[in-house]
Image (cartoon, rainbow, N blue to C red; front, side):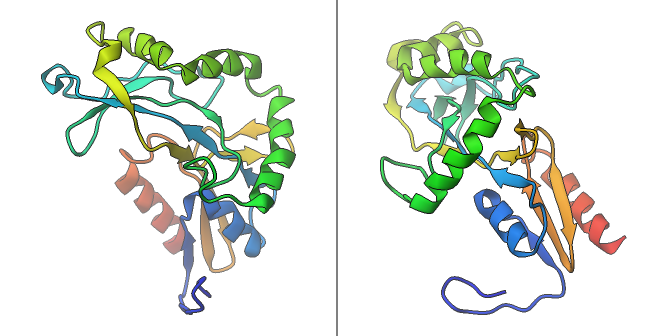
Length: 216
């Protein structure tokens, strides 16, 4: 394996868990060519909501037709509360700011892939648009959070946080956004193309699943 700085690493078996670039590496190995990454950006608002009122993450019941979880309340590792995220198309993989990480090649790839999703019958695309566009409004996000925790107020969440980019896998022939784990084997390689929620909470069991698939 040749790294971007020119260094080389030898391995007996490659496990590709490259997130937003997992499909790119898989394609280099001739694996998963029916899949493309279609990134989505999640925006958050941070606040100082009393944490004695929030001791656990609070999630709504998700729409089973779409892979997104809806607005939820989260306690961060440094003890702050945040609400979000949105699920808006990311124009390139590392679209964390206005132009940061810009890639014309990736912009072209998203432009080619996104129409496949929009015309797919696998998802409620119009419903997704109706629910996601209002999330640009901080007031709307707060009101969605109030459905989970009625004591939340707009004045509690005024600080925009760093966005996250979801490594969402698209099955190109069908236009389907994959909503489950996708792991593809290659020659002396294993490619984790889609590791969706609850990938974090199931990480140890999932790691065992991947290793068992290699060792038999």
